[in-house]
Amino acid sequence: MKEKINSLLEVIEGLTANSKEDVENLRIKYLSKKGEITTLFNDFRSVPNEQKREIGQMLNQLREKAQNKINDLKEAFNQVQSSCDNEDLTRPGDPIALGTRHPLSIVKGQIIEIFSRLGFTVAEGPEVEDDWHVFEALNFPPEHPARDMQDTFFIEKMPDILLRTHTSSVQTRVMTEQKPPIRVLCPGRVYRNEAISYRAHCFFHQVEGLYIDENVSFADLKQALLYFAKEMFGEHTQIRLRPSYFPFTEPSAEMDISCHICGGKGCPFCKNTGWVEILGCGMVDPNVLESCGIDSKKYTGYAFGMGVERITNLKYRVKDLRMFSENDVRFLDQFKESF
Ligand code: DAH
Image (tube, rainbow, N blue to C red; front, side):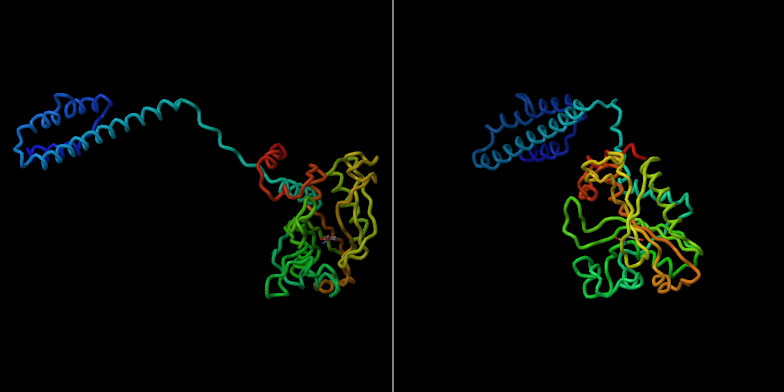
């Protein structure tokens, strides 16, 4: 009897089935009224009393193993069945969601494209810079507020190393590394120690322009900027230049464009002035040319710098600056058709 039970145990452990019917046949073969295991239980009556306890336990174990095995096999077929029930295998695959270009990249690309028609090429520089490239060479006096901890992120323990606060630092790099004529556009990310809100962020993007050659004049600057404004905001766009101050340009100006929302008539967007500010510009200060090793008696140049977020806001009227860095696809998806 013991041998029979042990050999049946081995057989049960190795059971396999190819279909639900196979499983049912196995159940009948071992566990039905006339099944092999049930028959053993019937034979149990003739087991001598002193062996009943041991053999009884073995039989119970065998029956339990067989039941579990058959349940497992049954379950396996049920699962295959149900996953097939839910799938339509002839269904076409889901389309792969295509990403979109970030609105700031779209606008940056447009700015570069427009100025490239005037012969500007792209130059880039590091975001982690030194004081000389960001401030010193650009004629910032030592007490200038932009050098303050309030505005600038300094790299810890290295007071001279900081995150650039404007892309004008790339001007410095280009002027020290190249000889005029120079005609570059410097796009990039800049950092300022600002509290984050809907209208300020601790990082944003700028595009800087620099043109240096013999006889470059303010009229050249104005012409290039007027061309840019019309290409970017439409044929009827007008510009105006207001005197301003930047340490690295003399004279300096800020440029407004006629409000493209109300056409200059006055609306809440332009605070009823008809104009919106878009960039800073001016003639490169001779001190800057000299600190970068360019002869200021021979060469003159103009520079301008604009915020990419600002231009993007004007084009697409994004009201909250934080949207640009949150990567919410519901926002980003809206720029699908723009390229
Ligand atoms: N660097 C200035 C800023 O971050 C922007 C700027 C103004 C750049 C005038 C220029 C310029 O090149 O000529 O606010």
